[in-house]
Length: 411
Image 1 (cartoon, rainbow, N blue to C red):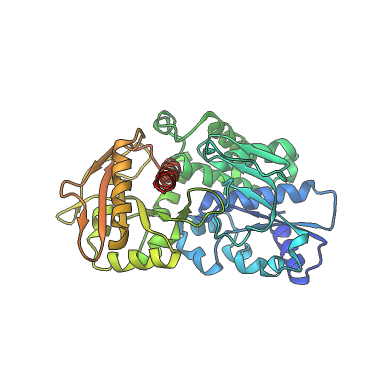
Image 2: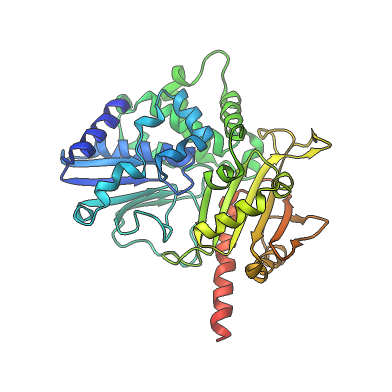
């Protein structure tokens, strides 16, 4: 069923034969959750569509050449018998984004509720939003949005699973789609452990969604050697495998721009670095060159890296554990990079993160920030192991808004 749906989408795009197109896309990080949600929600909407002339297109929000960097996504897609090459990327919808075609194209956001100013989809009308990221206090729902569901859960795939199982009969839900969503839930909730629930990385809705998928696709999901824990571990192992990836690849494979307000140009770019500790990353000879180029390419003042990687001492991995379900020897960290002209801006952020009430529990490096004529680098351990970029992004937005407010007041 899923392969047939994807094939029909491909045919509609090739022939440009549908009267109406609706792009369904996840966030710019394009992780497993975004890919699973876009694919599943587009499938759901297509099954519900009464109009044969409307085509729902699930789009991975990256160029196709970047999909190999998402190692956990490519691993799980292949495990679900969904070849990554069968999906759709930026280049797949170029024709739909031409000025003459845009009036017949709408947009559905999954796994995010606000678009970056730099997105290629910024001119499209938003009709649906389903997401699990926190809403900012001044968020305004788009007037064109008919369906809006934003709830705090561990994985957006849990919300999409709920919609899928409520709105479609069992025999219309493909097993490979169940498997895809299940993997996204597992990786976002640390395998649904009790520790993840205590740390608020997993909510009741995540457990319920996983149960539904287990009932729908038990034979596909499990064999005598598999379990929630083993499925989570194999996806995690793929995520933390960085063999063959350069530092440049790591910086760009899971990044999001950060702006003070929607539609405003970003001032910070925030990258999640899985598989490398902040200490190892910042002492590399190529770090300052790569970080500086990254800031220049994205036209931002700061690079903020949220790292989860092995802590090495004397070339050995130290024996520490973050949470049950997470890999041993790993720790969470934060690294902030700025070029010399943005040093004061970076210092203001480090001060803000350490003094403002937040849940990061930062422990700055004993040596203090590195600052010279070429760069500014601040590093710290994040002692709150429940923290991910999802919690850090609103703090960065708040900082940018405060800086903008101070600048306005200062004349």
